[in-house]
Image (cartoon, rainbow, N blue to C red; front, side, top):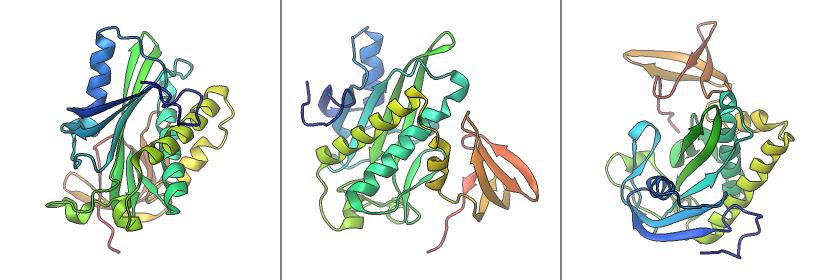
Length: 259
């Protein structure tokens, strides 16, 4: 279906709304495996995503109809594979800008792609890249944000939050989606044109624990370290015991900060 309410050139202009689906990323991949012609910027949004996924098969639990769960198709063939994390930075910056503009709250990103507010998880991203030789065929960007869900069960009660909890009011999901699409398109076009000169600076400005001494865990080892950057491939760079070290996804655990 076409969408004429978004003030964008292409991101979100083709908006597909689903009542229920296992995962919007999976739905995208299913359409593409059937050679369905999908325009860049197509967004698939689901009221109920009952098998949402995070990084490396982590699960994403969302109350039906309460939150924003959607996927976006981009075709960044201009981006070298060795610079793949730049797209992640663009999306992170866009989400942080969109939610901050929408709610007037300072949002942070916990590496590599969890959205945080006040040390609690607000949302997350899962980017799945499809390659053709040495170039990108497509990137499917799955985004989940806790919006109007006010209660979380089990361990999530202490680890998760939502915009509804933060603002003490309901948030219009389509208006929030429109703002996110606008911010992603702006950052993506800047990246494509080569004019996003402050991309990394903006990403680090919003990075949870950046340039702060904090505790982390690797296996049974608990250590103190300071985040100093992120590589173009997405490795986390830290200063640990006077040495520079790098970590890949799931290699370390952030230990909870107390308020």
